[in-house]
Image (cartoon, rainbow, N blue to C red; front, side):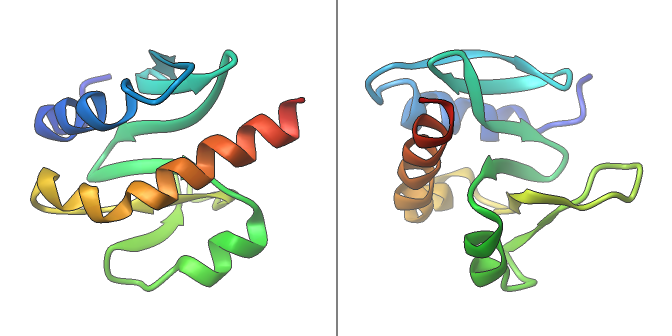
Length: 110
């Protein structure tokens, strides 16, 4: 699939591939980022999706930049959010969320 913004992928590469153990890959046809072989983030559509606990997802949703992750089939993924920023540099303010996602995925896969 090519339904993603190349500038967002470039920013995610810059931010995420410097984290210890993070590798680039593919998931759901999109550029993805994995820790210990498990996906914690991917670039797709209008933003970047990251995996977090369902309760945390509910706390973070603001309806503006952080939304529930809802693929084209209309089903909301309860443990995923979509962070949608116009300017890729703005993802830097979400760095702690990306780190939180890595920690969460490591915990649930250990």
